[in-house]
Image (cartoon, rainbow, N blue to C red):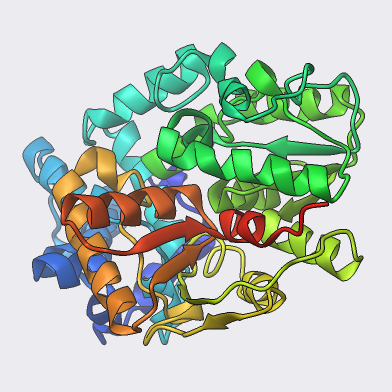
Length: 396
């Protein structure tokens, strides 16, 4: 392992932990397993030991021995059994940027060859197929063919004002493909001049970041920027919060970028979308990467509030305190059972509201919650906010 994977700020913040254990109290993985070794406070304590064992002066002062290969692999198992939801960071009274630290720690473990082998699969899939699922990238826009009246151009135009960046999950999973299908109808109704990138859309890089493969993202970033430039677009819209957060934090700021909730709210405010009344009681789940990650809590609620007749009932934990759905941080690939247990806690809280529908703004959240509800025969409608807007469209 090497200190070079951490910023100076991150190394200094390691010593700011007061062992208050608040991070453990709010961690969805700890709550699901009752295993304290999955907590932030445990992870920080172990990382401090490792750091002290690396430095010659500190090693002599603290008498630390470097961890064995087996110890590192055991530690790695706790590090990767995390959704990177950021709730530990939100609650830390010392202000430690824990989520950033976990990303650096994963990169450190990759460089130390102490990581789950599923990480190799993520790296290989993205390198070879340009998507995390190793699907044919030429099929990214095949969902267009399932529309009732697909346009001749398949929404892949030579030039357009707006690029809709679909994301890997919505491009390939039938359950999530309903989201781009719904958004294309919303955009058509609002007369938005938009295009897809089709096979020229590559993974945004978020799965690599979460896997500890940060140094492998640059080719993806450069390619996606060039692909948008080739369309002459000035705006990029994302229905995936992870793609949106990646572009906000790691891509050059060459375009106006919007999460779809922000863009749809603009369309409603501008009078480009007329919405009919829906008699529906819903609750809203804040996706981790949109809420805690990008600090966007209001746009989705404004969109829901703009639909006549829809009653929003908030969950016990919402906004910055929202419980994770279990679908983040590549956890489903690393430990599907733990992902499901975290989803159970989320669904239990949804059901406690009495709402018949849970709305979110993330295709992975839709997939995780809907899959859990279906497998456990729970009567609950799980929808993306784009689908709710589509349902409310006034057709001419």
